Length: 366
Image: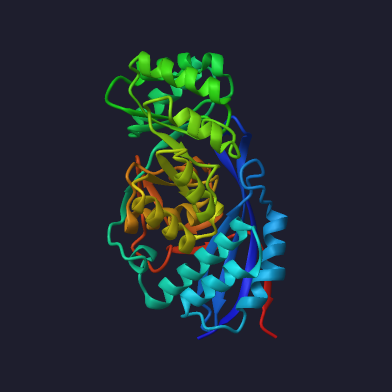
């Protein structure tokens, strides 16, 4: 059975709460959904989120990459030869990890649907429930404390606090959140590259000295500053999690070589999909690094793929899969759902997504 067509869908949907980090502020999910269709009319879905400040990927750029470079390598090819098709996607173009990741996930989704099994089964797992943290958007200490109490009341017990917008006030922000939720909640920090190395060490040591029981600190310094990341890691006790510094395997090899971080955050839109993500998780495990799987601002499609990966492969810490939880509504029908702090995978073939109500463009075999 061959790949007969590829559709691209531009999706924009509102968030119920603004999402604010040291890098950006957004009130919407903006993403490109890719639909790969076989000769029987079955569809597999993937998505490429637009996050200019992290991946540099745009909807227009991802769509051009898919349509002009990747689709010609796929049309008319065997849909069941998943390894070969994913390899062709990776070879089709340099960079463009978000676009490649969308097609990679769509191919996996289609393969699972053709076998009549959930995606997690295709990846080798069986569980359908995956815990997630929830992000507290950057803000002042009082706003963060109030948000923390609300998220705790909603059932979340791992809170990811966005810091890095103002190093001088970050210790007070962490102290306010810890006071608001008490000792039974895990708090992790994400500076989104917002600190200098010296600021990072000063803030993290202050947190350690204050006994605020923080689990880890994510990407404290600029993504390109691996020397600075290693300098921070060497001077604090809290685990340092590399995110923006690691897109692909070569990045992770360099982080390992420099001993720049203790953990890595693997994201499908950064690394190019499920196939390379599994390589990153295996490499991190081989070198004793901790792992989580993260999400950008994505719909049920991207989060469902990431959650399926976690369900099949596991991570050393609770993963960051709350992106679709932020949606006020979504044009993506079915797929994952949230049960408090748990992502529930559907008991349906593939990702369980049944339709995407957006403007669509198609390329078919001539």
